[in-house]
Image 1 (cartoon, one colour):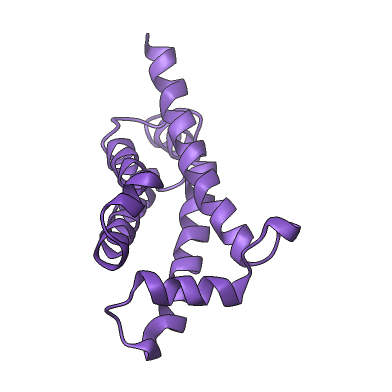
Image 2 (cartoon, one colour; image 1 turned 120 degrees about the vertical axis):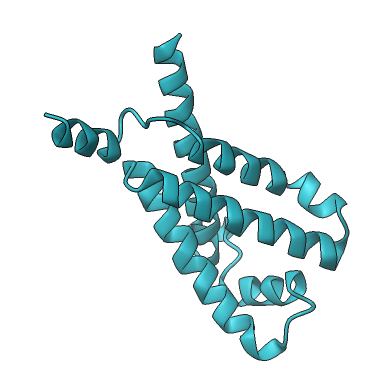
Length: 143
C-alpha cells in the first residue's frame, strides 16, 4: 500500500507539472501548429482578468509564465515540493476564480481548474515525497 501511495504522489507531481509545461509550451509556440502563441495568450490573459487594468496584462502574462515554468520544474525534480505545490494550488485557484468572474463558473469547471488546484493542495499535504530531490536531501540530513 505504501508503494502505491508513493507512486500516486509521484503521478500527481508529474501530472501537475505536465499541465503547466504544456500551457507554457503553447504560449511560446513550442507545440507547432497546435500552439496558441504569445499574442493569443496576452489576449486570453486580458479576457480572464477582465477586471484588471489593461496596463498590467503583460506583467500578469509574464509573471504567470515564469511561475508556471518554475513550478513545473520544481515538481518534476521534486525539489521544494511542498512550497511548489502550495504556489501551484494558489495560482490555479486564483486563475479559476478569475475565470469564474470573467466567464462564469462553468468555464473553470469545464477545464478542471479547481480540480488541479485541489490536487496541488493535496500534494502539499503529503508527509513525504519519495522519488524526489527532497527525499534524497532528507535522507542525507538524517544520516
